[in-house]
Image 1 (cartoon, one colour):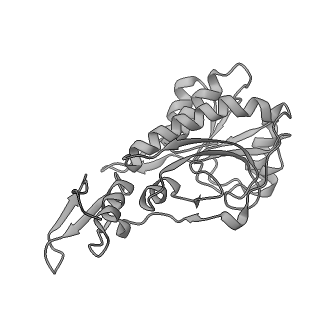
Image 2 (tube, one colour):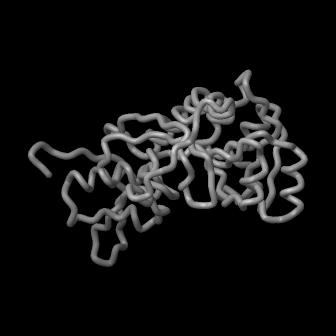
Image 3 (tube, one colour):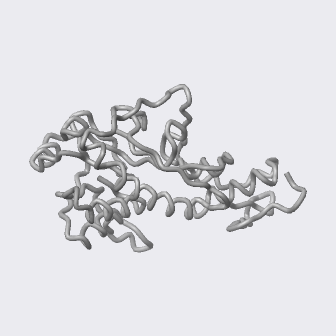
Length: 252
């Protein structure tokens, strides 16, 4: 199950594996996109079609009809990456090995919708991907495996692309051991959890009361969306987009 571009390397990894047989891909319905608002398939649907994998596009997974279609597939395991819907309990309980999710943070830190952006914004030096067994909570399930990487000077798009590939590698490395019963998921330490709320357009507005280091991090965190911006008039009639920045020596 997946929708966004970040899920595509994971799908390709599973499809090429000799261990797993991808019987179907579940993704969001086609949406209007572009200036003409023409219906367009999700990135995951495009990848699935290129690979010759059948796709399902339910509006919701909460109906008996959609559950029945999934049940007919008799899945041993469901892998979820950036799907965009909350899975109801009857779907979580369907596969013999449960549902697993690739999350783009080192859980329990940065649970939620925008872990990549907030890790950069907050000045974390490293992040990564976590493979977890899903439960009814939001990114609260027990951890199967993690993989780390250094953030460096990456912006959100660059880190997104790196973590997409890192997540695909983690699936190849850890999923066979989990399915074989050689890896037991470890409960998260809830006391150490932090939350990565959804990004809004207003988050891109530069707060000049922040330090130079904090502003530079925010610019990287919100590239490409919503993009960092500032106004040069009190009426905010003139808006400047900021695509890249670096701190000068001696600034803090």
